View 1 (tube, rainbow, N blue to C red):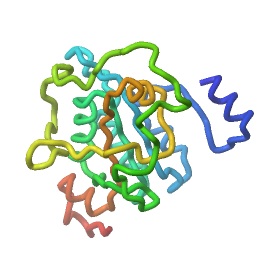
View 2 (tube, rainbow, N blue to C red):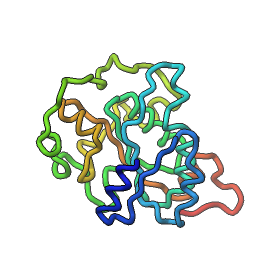
View 3 (tube, helix red, strand yellow):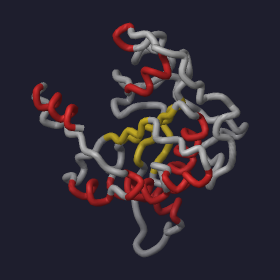
View 4 (spheres, rainbow, N blue to C red):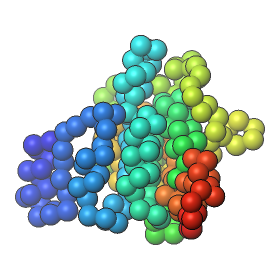
Length: 214
């Protein structure tokens, strides 16, 4: 965190700030500190998979976090989630789809279609670096299998998940670059923050009071 902030300062990036915290413990106070409407994109990158059942309570993406983001992200803002563990990506996608306020999309905030061309070249890691070791293939079907609340909500009728074919932005996280350098896949999905009517429908409050409009 300290190194990141020093780099941002030396690069005169006044809109960049690194902080240390626990998102699963709640982000409402931090999100409330932002001026209304300023938050345009939230990215969740490779959270701890918490494979053991007793560790599931430590998951980063929980219904609480989903609802806090829903309550503070303005309509039209973008949520991007990704993981190299398909089960973790499925859990995140299912929670954001089930709780409401977010709609899956294949276009970023600039209206660009995220197809198999363009974006970051995933055929090689950044700067031509080579993987130091083979590492672990966490995409293996035997890793992290099980069930979870809202399972399958974000899936297609045939049970598959409509993952993005590539990274929609011109950057990679360190974890992402390491995974891709070993020839392993990333599992990604984009959501757009829906209007008030979509939230009311998902929460069952549709038609209550004066009603909400998109």
